[in-house]
Amino acid sequence: MTLVRGTFVHCPKLGELDILDDHLLGVDDAGFITYIGPATSTEAIQMLGDGEDVTIIPEGSFLLPTFCDLHLHAPQFLYQGTGLHLPLMQWLDEYAFKAEEKLDADPGLARKVYERLAARLVEAGTGAVLLFGTIREETNLILAEVMQAAGIRAFVGKLSMDISSRPSYREASAQASLASAASFVHGCRSQTAHLPPHVRLVQPVITPRFVPTCSNELLAALGELAETEGLAIQSHMSEARDEIEWVQQERGMEDMDVFEQNKLLTPRTIQAHCTFLSPAQLTRLSSLGSAVAHCPLSNAYFSERPFPLREALQAEVTVGLGTDVAGGYSIDIMSAMRQAVVVSRMREGARKEAGGTGDGEQVSVDWKETLYMATRGGARALGLQGGLFEVGAPFDVQQIQMHDPATASGVGALDFFGDAGQDGTTVDLRVLEMWWCLGDVRNRKGMWVQGRKLKMPI
Image 1 (tube, rainbow, N blue to C red):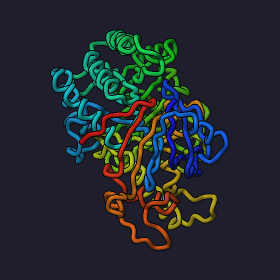
Image 2: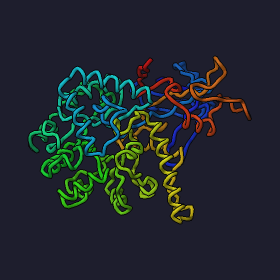
Image 3: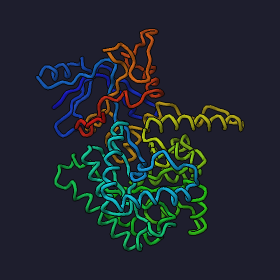
Image 4: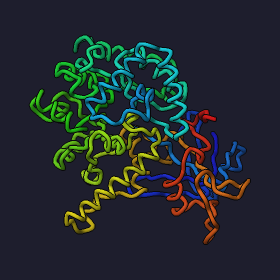
């Protein structure tokens, strides 16, 4: 067993933030937490005296669960930060489909892009990620292989799409698409079948891109495959006006109805965006047990409407955060947290201007709530036990440094002036909020997934 002593910060529930100062944590050889408690307790003192290796987290640093990114298009990392001037359906034709097709045609390029993506995720503190891939099975197996090698907990989805506005980028038929999805599931699982279960970090995910790219026949077959194999499901739902209008014209119903009819809204489902869902639909989504990947940045570009986050949380929908690269230009979940708060405050301002009153009607969220969504909320959506420090949870952790003892100053963008004892050496709500607002990759000094320390980019 390995022992870690220091300050631990986590959000066990929405709206709660616990600072566990001078605690001792035990991790077994399989990477699971076996003990956590005050370092001065009788049990902890006995453990410290047993001769086990102890890692000391220095003053001015703390451990936090790794971030979960619930929505990221791996091949679109190829053109991250460009081409955000078009409506969604045009953007797909002009940028997304071309990039995905390019990687499917060049396995060497795909591996290069995915290896760099993995490095950026570690740098950003993302220990678990839900990925959209491409339509070609082999390209997605490269993605799965790269993520497993990097030590990232990845849920990889081979795209299923038998309809496309780009004729060269679609599968030949519903039957061919289903066969490819089933083959990918087998191939992805086979990559790690020789490993102990706790080391199998990569899982396949059923991934109908969205209703406009999937026939009813394909959606029904994918729903059956997911149910038979017990697979997670991901897609896009109620994202943009042009997408919603297309589905209504072609299918005569909302895309939420299409997904539900085909067994694709389950407790294993994560739907991205959902910006146009009504309060009644949010309640329905909650009853189905499906989660939402909230992507505030890409919503601003393609939905042109904010997600009703507070209403979703009040309806007890499980909500986590997504970067939606490349529909969002930042791969950093810290950016998603900040944007979620900003958008919610703008919504609160609009509510007040419209005459809304009463504390119970407020729609804004605060930084602590988004930190929950980035950690424990995202883990819950993915069906993981992690996202917090408790016995039985995997040791998926990032080390954040706020104060540098060598220079007696703040790290990165953090500046402390010693007022009221606040020099960054003590972890409290004030300095945590400062890190949440101003922190960046310079504050991240270590990453562990399932107890294994990951290689940090230089």
